[in-house]
Image 1 (cartoon, rainbow, N blue to C red):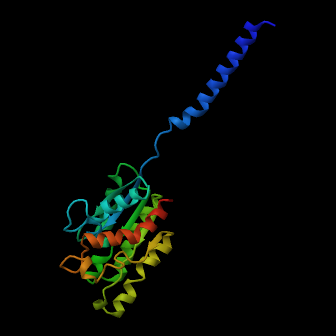
Image 2 (spheres, rainbow, N blue to C red):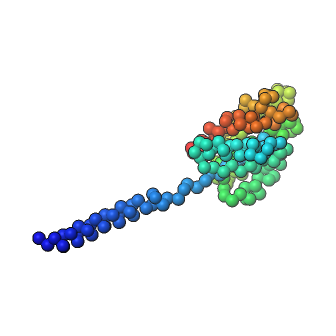
Image 3 (cartoon, rainbow, N blue to C red):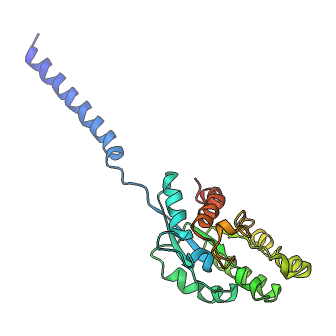
Length: 220
């Protein structure tokens, strides 16, 4: 038997197997990290962190909560204090056009200022409908964070205002979080001295409440 020939052939086989194994493993080893997800929090002072130190507002706190749950997401603060649904509708286009990439989810949290100013619910409905329609037109998943009228607005106003958000969400196939201020509104411990805007503890409660809906919207 020619041992030199057999040894050489065996060596080539081993080298070939090693090369094949290396090729098979290389893509997994060199796999690029997953793309960071993008969330737009489009709203008013409730998303803008009104009178709160940097990092304590809704957007950064939601981002921190997502990352603690293993979701690499960047939450963009698209809130402007004092905005009505009409004012937000007017700036939606350039807000989206100014983002580096299309968001993977848009949270629409508006209507509080409309209610506080006793604006006609029909107008709020039209503006909310237009906002969600534009987002869906751009193929952006939407989570509508609903608002409820304060009790002092009276039953007639509440009956016209409160259904806006679930009905707009249903009309456009958007997800719904029924009340953005759930377990926060009316609790002095969770609000600033004005009794309207959440303090840091209130923001954390809001984030805890909406987090499962946001994660679901991101497919997590």
